[in-house]
Image 1 (tube, rainbow, N blue to C red):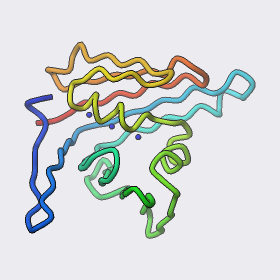
Image 2 (image 1 turned 180 degrees about the vertical axis):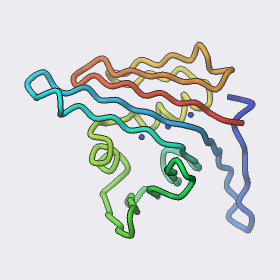
Image 3 (image 1 turned 120 degrees about the horizontal axis):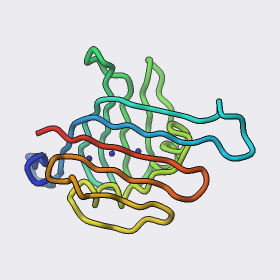
Image 4 (image 1 turned 30 degrees about the horizontal axis):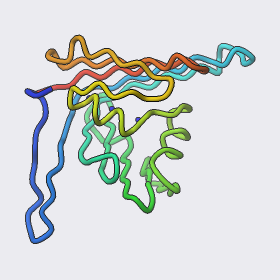
Length: 156
């Protein structure tokens, strides 16, 4: 739930309600280890190309298949979040419950957007590594149970 000064694209919505949104695209991978009391098969892994536009409060995240077609689309606002995949649309009370359902773990959305902008923002249980940010690489690990690793490679 994912991404550089050189890779950030600022786009502008036109019209009377001007808003400035950031946009990122690249590859995202997340691995969640199985809890200690669960079988190893309970571990989850997810990897996809993505496009992310917006803010922690409102935006859109699209995941693509290896062939470039849309695998899933997530839209969120302060009121709700929706997940569209394989012709089905599911609605959630917010982005956090949607991410939990989709990835099997929480991802600190506000911190993620800060990380995408090269800012070290603390997130409960998460540790971010921005050492390779200039090359478009972000890695974050959740040290609390269940351990998880999020890797982003941003493309210009």
